[in-house]
Length: 486
Image (cartoon, rainbow, N blue to C red):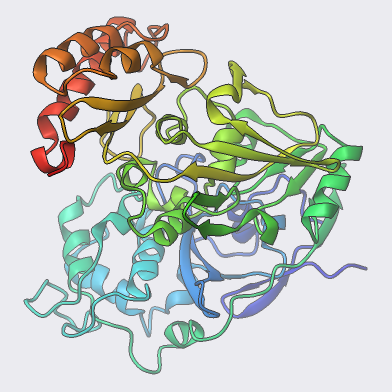
C-alpha cells in the first residue's frame, strides 16, 4: 500500500483514503485541529491560514503562510505543516499568541488562529530586522526598539469584531525568535523534498508527476485532466461551485517549470514560480511588476498563485496579463511533442480561451530587455488590496532625449472578453512629444479602447472614464527625470 503522509505539528499523519477534492482545511479539521476556520472558502479572509515549510532558495526552509481552504490535502503528501495548535499551548504560548492576547487582539476568536499563523510567518521571515522588543512579555505595545514587522503580511486576514489597531500593536511589538525556538531552528535545514504522488479515492484521482516529461505524457493521454499549480482557482471551483474533477494533476513543484534566468536578452520566469517568489527573484529588475505584485490579491494568495496559473485561466480580469502585455512578454508552451513560443498579445483568442492546445502547458514567461523606462500599473477596484479589478491598465513608454515618445505599450484588463493591447492609443502617442496636449489626445482614445460592459463591479461608462483618466494620472505622477533622459 502506498504511504501518503503529512507531517503536522511534528507528527506524521496519514492521507490514506483522502478524496482528491478534499481541502487541506477540511482534512486538518477532521484530524481534530479545529483552530483553522472556514470563513469565505475562497481565500479572502485568512481564517484558514496555516504555515507550510517551503524552500527558501538557499538550502533552508521558509515558513510560508497559505490559505488551507484552497490547497488540496493530497498536495501536502510528504510535506510539513504547522497549524495554530502547533505554535504553542495555553500553558506555554508562542510569542505571537502572547502578543495578541496582551494587546487585546482577539475578541470572538474566530479569525485569531489565522492571524497568528500569518503573523508567525512574518515573525520567522529571514532578513527581518533584528533587535529590541520581546513580545513574549506582558507588555506587547510597540516600543522604539521593536523589530520591524511588515504589516502587509496580514493583508489577507480579516477581522470583523476586534478592529485592527490591537492586532497591529501586537505585530509591531514582536521581537525576534529565541535562540532555542524550534521553528526558528527548523529554518536552517532543507524543506521537505517533493514526492511523486498518485492517490485515488471516491472515484477520482490526484497525481503529482515525478518530472515534466511524466506530466506531459499523462496529459497527452488524458488531455481533459485538471491541471493545478497554486490551486487558488481550483479551491474556489471546488468549495463554491462543487467541482469534482475525475483527474487532477499537480505541476507546481516541477523544477522545469520553476526556472529563473536573466541575461542581456531578457528575463525568464518559470510558470510555476509563485508570485511571492517572482517578486523576491526579480528584486527590483522590473519596476512595472513591482507596481503590480503588491496589488495582486494578498500575501496568502501570492504565496501560492503562479503566473502560469493566472495566464492559464485566461480570465479577462486577471491582473498579470495587462502588465505582461505592456512588457511585450512571450510564453513558452510545451507539450509531449516539443515546445513553441508565442507572443502574449496573440495568446488570448476569446473569453477564457487561448491558443494553448490540449495537453500543452505554459513552461515559462519571457520578458525582453531592455525595459521601457516609464512604467505604471493602475488597478481600479472597490478595495485597494485583495480585490478583483474593475479595470487594470499597465503602461510601458520610452521617451527619447528629445521628449518624443519612441515606443508605447499599454495593456488593458477588464474592458473586453480578453486582456488586450491598447494599440490605437499607442499609435497616437508614438512620434509625438510627451506633453499634456499629447496625453489628452491619447487619453480620449484610450477611453474608447475595448468593449467595456456594465456589471456588479462597474458600469461601462465608469470603466471608459477610468481608462481616460489613467494616462493623465501616469503623466502627472511621473518625475521629469523618469520621463526624459538627461
